[in-house]
Image 1 (cartoon, rainbow, N blue to C red):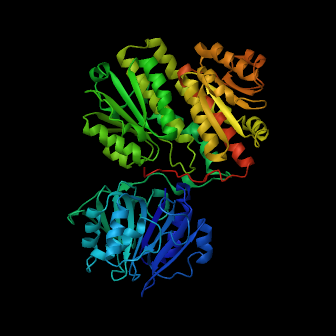
Image 2 (image 1 turned 30 degrees about the horizontal axis):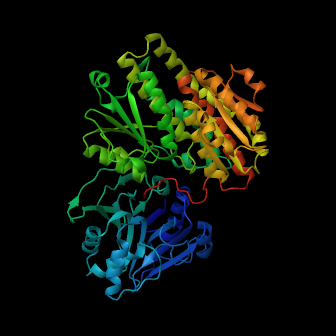
Length: 608
């Protein structure tokens, strides 16, 4: 959520900042603004609405001269999305400008203190408190004022700050919200994420918690919250700007769906050597794996659904007890983590606030933590005891597709590794699983090639009021993700239910013409779910069945059928999710929704 970009160098700052902010639109926002120092004073232009409105106001930055500036796209937390609440914010003398990503938890107490000292506020935001507090502490030394603010503020924040009487510097600060910095020969940059500055530099520095960076043209200096200077190593970004471009697709989401075969293949190829699964990042001996008795999987949203599938797979395949938690619940329920337990935290961005805090809580309880993330150098990657990357490449659309598919593969690999070491699968079954795993990319390509069939079906349900997803076992986890995709981007009400729970309440919602999407990919549960299909059809439901290509008899009980290729029952989510992603996409397109940037949502949720 929120995007920050800053620039200092020899070029005009505003066009560079606007270009960077355009690369961060996927993060979600409802207003935008810039502060540019023109050589004499700080000028701020900001507006509610899309970045295009800011571009129009500034004629693509041409009307804001100056070589140093900061920009922001805001996702509203405190205060409505208005011009006044948009960032950047000034102090009263308009000599300090600040942009902020995060939430200040004690802002009201700080605001009351400042009001008692005569300060007046122009917005409803917690962010304005920061710039006024900087003003309160500022005595000519920016670093000293910033560190004093850091010691007083509670919450999460990434900050970009300009002081008018230090026009050759920008300051960047981070605590629990993502922020990176980079430099080239004659310029320096700050950004919330790599794509914003990839056009200008490939060497970036990931700022750690409670660190401050002073940026000058071509120069970076790093400090602790106690003003001690430190050194940091840069990370070289291998992927290029073309990988975050649409490449001829109408939406990033469609492009990323088509990148799933590659993401799946690259994720498993990183860990396969012949018939051996090698996960060096796990840092566990065979004896430790054999003695493992409990795994905790912690995640949010789509990553949680990947973890839900993993719970079924790991417990059945490797016979290890798995507890699954939403990160926002895990961190507050005082979980029991026994010695020797493994905690797996999953996050596409590696910056998800609740998941990151769950990681930290787990480590304080003595647990070993494995992070499964997609972003190299992210907070979870840095703080976990070990990290397993999903090689999906940059994912721009808010609704995750290829990252989910890559997360499933990483979790399958773990399950297979554990099962092989523990002897809970035979050598023959293990080799059969490897064959099926290697087939998944071409099978996903086959399903993507049938998109027109899904599009025709979706066009019939653009005006639907509610859609229900049902399934059992792994099909229940699939239904959860299919339902989430639909509601995320189409705003159409959808719910997922364990099919066996229908008679415990949900079946009362079924009426004539209601669409029920029934997943039946698990052979041992097939007949049970067919019975549930019969129940909802008897109450007027129209049933779309999603099943294996061996179950053609389902056509006697369903109104419409989508078949997936044959694979291990452990891996069916990787195939069955493809038609559900396409269905959600075409519903959203048909309704005229902003597929890549759905309302009220952000790509990376970096606050609670």
